[in-house]
Image 1 (spheres, one colour):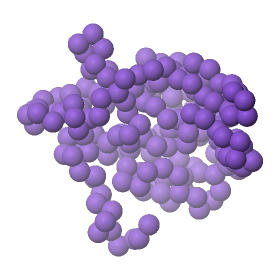
Image 2: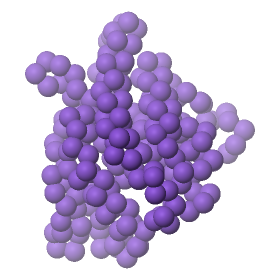
Image 3: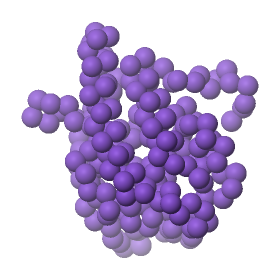
Image 4: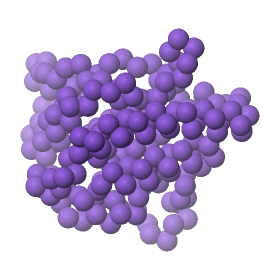
Length: 188
């Protein structure tokens, strides 16, 4: 992840970047993409993580039976739930659990899932203290966001991540978003 000089002029972008770095430093877990270092190169700030050669879920399960898809989706989600349990035990909430933030790779013949992108993560026990998320801000990805997080992203709790994990599991099994937004009465 790179923060360009133009983006560095935005204090909120810098705060979010530094918060992500701080959170990743605290989250050492086998199912969370590991941070390697944070630094500067020229006028760019960067955050580097371990290389994890992800396979898109759609390509991975393209020729699987429904039974295989369910079995593997549940196994991957069990890994992601272990990652979330670790984060929640450290008073952190991800706020953006979705298919795009779950990386899957084949390591030594076994499928391994890792949770990535903690850019929206925060300490939920200090909700509102940083003033980075203002009241009324909607933070997350709508098709996978819990109703509570949609109403008040600032006060998101671990239950919001669990909802998002369930919505992601639904997508992994069915291939469809849990709530089709294109026909939703609210226009976003």
